[in-house]
Image (cartoon, rainbow, N blue to C red; front, side):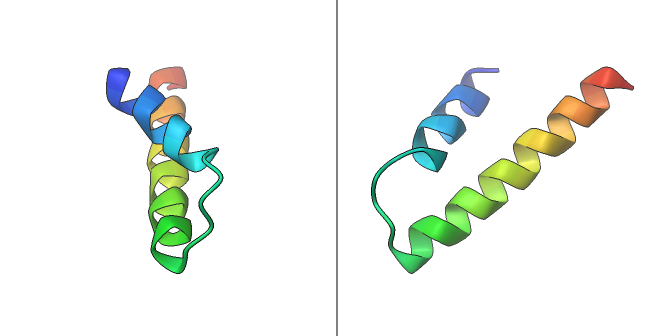
Length: 40
């Protein structure tokens, strides 16, 4: 889950550029999907 931790670091970073927002959105969706798969 190391990639996930890096993703979350980016999600909660202070940089609010459009590209960062897009990456944050993708990271968040990927993280949620991974959590759902682990639960199932």
